[in-house]
Image 1 (cartoon, rainbow, N blue to C red):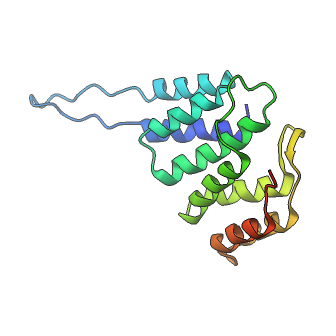
Image 2 (cartoon, rainbow, N blue to C red; image 1 turned 90 degrees about the vertical axis):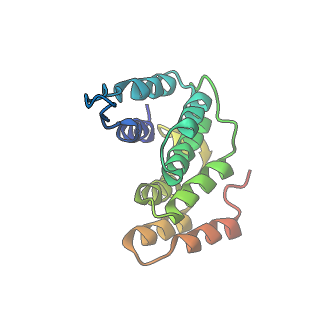
Image 3 (tube, rainbow, N blue to C red; image 1 turned 90 degrees about the horizontal axis):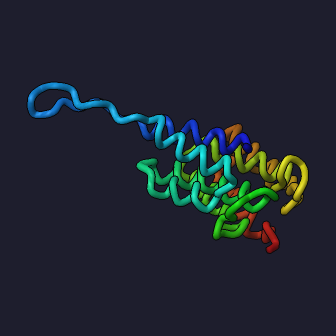
Length: 166
């Protein structure tokens, strides 16, 4: 399982937790189990069902920027994973666009994910390389992390460089 997928599971766990709310009698309502949605998501990812995991996140109560960040990673990872049982119905460009939307909305993890993807490329454990590193974009997103560059600048740079090419 990719680190991004494990991170997704952790985020879903946090997002799926609910507070016990008293019912009309004043007795607290039973807490819904956060473990079940997390287990369902983890099962999809462990089976390589990236399309199912993406649909699961889309139906979740996560904020739009969280959905974009998680699904952007699932798209990129799912396209590179040679053992995927279902592939994301999206392109590399779609995956990057979702990560960029999340980064532009202020999701710090997506900024780090973009820096990493452009620094090492899109691949599966160093194999199954779908996109080689793009140093200029990796450096750009590192500057966003450092607070010296805007996400919008890096997004525009990717479009000018026509990355990815396919």
